[in-house]
Image (cartoon, rainbow, N blue to C red; front, side, top):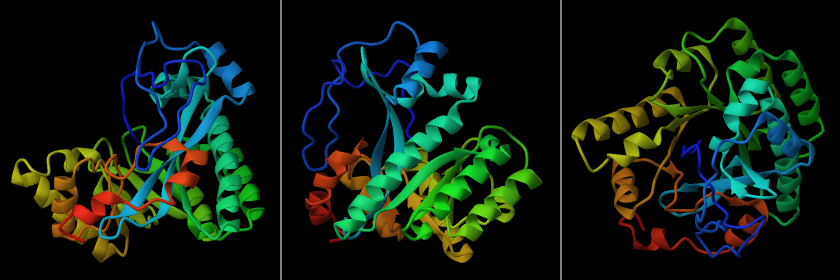
Length: 298
């Protein structure tokens, strides 16, 4: 999940947009910042007005540039301040226990869009962020299970990226809930692996099918050798456990080439694309990925 300043503001005018060029987001440049974070009343009103919109960021094959899946991210189309990043509202939603409302809003938008793409001949996987604390809510899991039973596409095309919001081992209830979702056919991913509270123990407690290696390791891949050693050994760990490894934070061709040399296969980052509205993604995916032609892996 991308991290940004708590005062991040992407759009320069209310709901103003521009056409996304291939490989670029349709976000406008920053021209002003919020004086303070939105209040709970503001966020609640935004939820009622359905101002929170699903954006997607592709996960791509480092060797071919092919995109078969995306991560779904939240953006707030604020009527006064334009498109706001999650850092401006996630803390309020967590405090007020509104993260479930946001989750289902993004889920509905994304499942509808996935069906549309499938009707056009493309099955694109969708990945959603869900925190460990949300898994304690039986109502959320029951509602999610009911909704997924109505989805006509393979549930193996849907992934839950589990984010950690507290220390300690995963409790038995969380493991039980995750197993319920896995038995439905969903994929489970451990997000930001290698940072925060994530640990090797998590991989033994939960039936994950994917590891997302945190962007911090990619950022320093050309620096001290320790980072490359960790990446290389995480790749080996994922292989031995039968899991897919997704490397986050790929922003340069040099990083891309280093990862290819190490044997990494799937990545995510600005080199491929920034988060974009799902309507923009439909046009973007029709274009080639020029960095893959210039890399040593081509």
